[in-house]
Length: 137
Image (cartoon, rainbow, N blue to C red; front, side):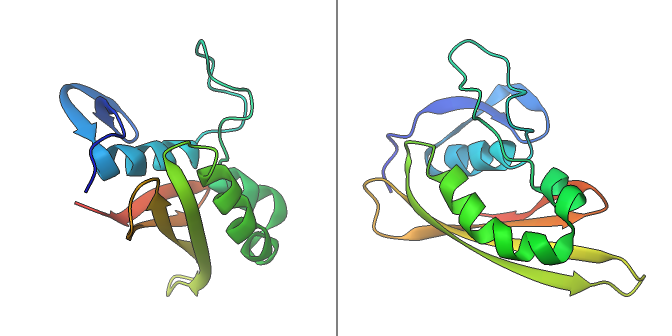
């Protein structure tokens, strides 16, 4: 595994200044943040206004059935905006939960630049939130 993808503070929903991420873990965290950020709300020097694609927001706006059709293409395009990502494939499945609610499971296979194997990133969308279900260690 290559380690040339940078190093940054560890963080998903909050950031730790005492722990750092690098390599695939760093990219997985960056993609999670990208998929939980409303487009254009990241106001930091050098951040493009096209950053962010809030999956839960999209599902709330168009509904689960329409999101099933939109998300595979949209998430691939959004992931590939990160210059460390060579390609990404998203498979979206609808889950009818036992309590009558619905959720979407988003399974991404991400291929990084200069790597031969993909890594998996799995998210769940339910009740207006996106959560990390699984990723590389």
